[in-house]
Length: 238
Ligand SMILES: Nc1ncnc2c1ncn2[C@@H]1O[C@H](COP(=O)(O)OP(=O)(O)OP(=O)(O)O)[C@@H](O)[C@H]1O
Ligand SMILES: [Mg+2]
Image: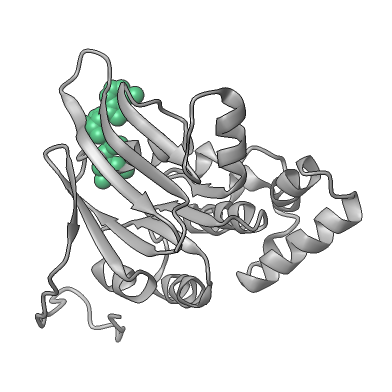
């Protein structure tokens, strides 16, 4: 396995705040990694460092073995990455869904027809073809999440960085997304608080606690039983 990205002793803090990341070391090639940690522990911050939206104050980021320092290095790095933002409103900016999805491919130099064709394929794959002409900012939260994912997948990235992809999704859509990600042969780092989803879509787990990033190596088997006292609608838990 060749390493795509690695972090060497990275430290990060926001101005006038306690450190968020302390001497983090990490590397990823073609693995499927889940990332957990409590709210505010620094998960999103870590992804933003990997994609170059934030720069480490100490330590180094490497892409395919070379240190990433210049804007040119970052541009090259981003071509390999597909980053799904925690908040889809940060990701969608075109008037209609199809324009949002075709934006990246057009930017890459594809013709209008090629970009449209590729965008429609992704919409079909995610089972949201019916949204193609919708006004993006009027979509529901879950619909926005799927459209944002389409803007990422249409670029054929080598590594997916997904920040809480199942947020706002109803159980059926969550299942659909789980199946899609389970079957996609793309390396990934997925942030989620949804253990069952991570079990299906990733093979390794990392956790951030008190600024430290570490791999969780041991499995933990347990069984849940619970009752919904306020509703008798039949439903499934995955
Ligand atoms: N731009 C910023 N300026 C100052 N502090 C920030 C900024 N962005 C995030 N923080 C703080 O840094 C900490 C880590 O934020 P981050 O978004 O990385 O957490 P997270 O682990 O992704 O949390 P969540 O599970 O809630 O999404 C939080 O305490 C947050 O308030
Ligand atoms: Mg976050």
